[in-house]
Amino acid sequence: MTLRVVFVLMTLMGLVQTAIASEQPNIVWLLSEDNSVHYLQHYGSPNGPTPVIAELASEGITYNHAFSNSPVCSVARTTLMTGVLGPRAGFHYHRKMVPANLPDGVEMVPSYLRAAGYYCSNRQKQDYNVVTDKVWDESSRSASWRKRPDKSQPFFHMQSFGASHESSLHFKWGQINREALKTSEASVELASYFPDTPLFRYTQAYYHDRMTLIDSQIGAVIEQLKEDGVFENTIIFYFGDHGGVLPRSKGYTYEGGLHVPLVVRFPEKYKQFFPGDQNSREDGFVSFIDFSPTVLKLAGLKVPDSMDGEPFAGKGVSSRSVSQRNEAFGYADRFDERYEFVRSLRIGKYKYIRAYEHFYPDAMQNNYRYRMLAFTQWRDLYHQGKLNDPQSQFFKPKPVELLFDVESDPHEVVNLAADPKMRSVLLELRSRLREKMKTIHDLSLFPENQMIDLALDNGIAFGRKRSGEIEDLLDVVDIALLPWQEAGTKLANALESNNPRVRYWAVTACAAFGDQVNPLIPRLQKLLTDQDPQVCIRSAEVLGMLHKADPQEPLYRVLATSDSNAVAAAAMNAIVFLRDHHEYQFKIDASMIKASDEPLVQRRLEYLNPKK
Image (cartoon, rainbow, N blue to C red; front, side, top):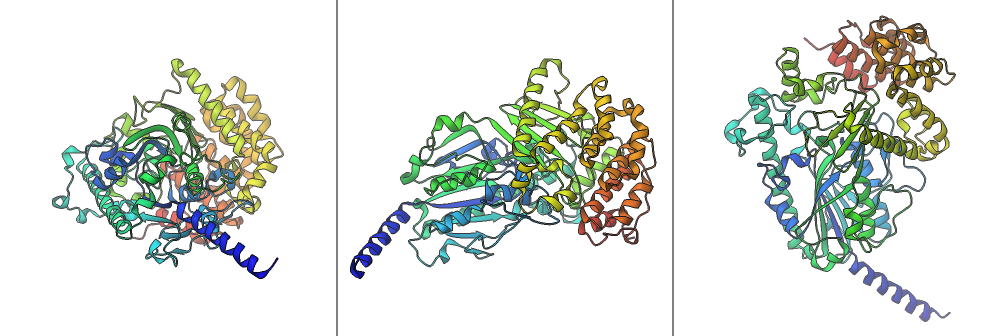
């Protein structure tokens, strides 16, 4: 082959690549932080006008049922960027003690796009729970598609707007400025679980105003796209990065924590990629695991097998296939220093929540959350006995299972799990959730310290290898769902298992039975000195709740002897739980804790020993 022929071929290949690039749409993600659908007029609220977002919707599609899989930033964003469920890969804890490695075959969506010729920019928030190399061409406060070296190059731009972040509600009493509000406090529609106080009304009105502010900031980005002559070549996604942010939303698997706004505007030249008409609303369910596959599909790229989601737009995606989707899976685990293990499954109008550590009230202390005045006022009113039953639920242990009809009960306060008429629905959703967790090899069945030691190199491969054990552990903790007559013998056997994780979840299941577990108390007391520190911690919690043993000595001992940061964080979580909700008196300081340098432990010490 002559050099001339090679040159001609290379030239032709370049022309083909340029032609392909010119047909690839630019894609922009615009994210408002920490807000659910409940604060936008576009989704039915009387407040929170967002005319720019409404204009985008008039030229695109509003998704009525879009869900973050996780109700907190780092977990949600890592899911969003990988298309992988957090508990399957090991990045489901917020804030990470040790970041997980991206498993073999898993990349973040900009990596695939950059390899295909896209310029990828992010302004600016990343907040990933995994070890990353260079994900973006640029991620900074000034990152922009405008910096791409070749103006004909397609781009993917992601921009986060922090005016709606939880921290925007961390004002002090002296900073309240009612005269500056644009939203009338009297017009605010408070959730039925909130106390109707001037502070709650002000906080929500202020938050509606924040959404309107973000709308204007989104408008500025759109004007830049128009100025650059790329608006009609750009598909724009607007969505919330998870739910929030008033109390009982961010961090929780209720609709307020998971149900996010999503509007997608598509130009005329790309409307064939979208299964729907302009200015329409789509009722089919989409989740964050679907966003990366959708972007790759729009760019004309293959969706990797590693992704858990399915495209909801792109060539070949039909309106019928999207409209038939009616399922959303959610997960919440450790949020900062506060531990919890909750999974949710919504199918159609029914929402099932399985609280594996149901004895932890939703109100358990998290220092960052309680910077919000509404949080602290709510707790004060509870202790003063001034709340009704729906308003008090937040401060009490949860049932093991919760079932809601979110159409008739949008605030999720009427638990239907014990209603005989709903038995078939309960069993169906329970079974579907169990199957989901077994299918993904849910890594939360391994306590965090063991997951750090065993699973962070490749969580997906580890879960697959240990799938049999994970299924067994799920069966053990689900003994809590059985009548005591069936559960007693199973628990007795599990408490004697050689596997510490079986013992751990057996102890956890015992908490569901209250005084019925009395025949097993000697076995539980024996586990206060178990060789596994997590078994000791959980045994101290359960026996402390039942007032069958003083939990202080075993917890002090674990803290003094374990060098595991995760074990220390779990023990301090138990101490705060037992002190605040079961009236045990603990005296603890850093000198008593071997892993006292762990930031999550320090947060607990700050709370337990406030500066005078």
